Image (cartoon, rainbow, N blue to C red; front, side, top):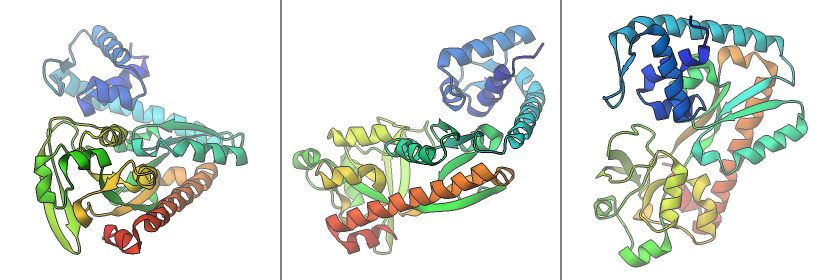
Length: 321
């Protein structure tokens, strides 16, 4: 009866996310495909599994009853796949890499560079980052920012995430320079919603010279993709208080963006490449993970050097704290 494991994956993902759109992204499907899989599964069971009138979807009692069995099915599937992958412990095995939206500009060329050295190596590049999906076995490597508590994994440092508050020159000319976080309440502020992608409220700490303050705002436009935030700020629609350095360094050099907030910034934190301990035993994954982390760390250092040339070492040192 239940020979469609993809439908089971859809069901389990919907139980976790409560959202057809999030499930579609996580499983690399379109929304209609997710809806069809769910409808077919419900037809086979003869029961509704979710209350679709609620946002997010709520599981029915029937869904709660079968969820543990569905999760065990996927665990068995993952065990079989991992066994097969270990039999393919060579340069031709597929390496699945989960990376963030902000890395789209440079991750492809890094993968191409590695592929020139190992032309038989296969890669599946997965976007965006989803920690639950990674832990469930949907990727071999994941690019993390500040996720130092992830257990059962090998974490390789790949540099430091540095945030720069930025706006476009046109926006500054129209609205004036923003010097302090207390002034942000009078402006449209864009940011990336890593913590909660449903609430129209943002709150995070900004710091300068050892002094910290919390910035709180009620937003009218939410972007879950940092590239969309980047584009909106470039077009002069508002301010980004925490733009990653690697995403805006080109724009700073070419004058399309300028720093704001007079040194106030979101605290920096470490970045990692992580893989599960069992996957670390596989030589192709281990070799690539070390190369990948070093490549990303080198790129971060290059961005920092370019920032120093623009604004001096003191500007960078302030952002590192």
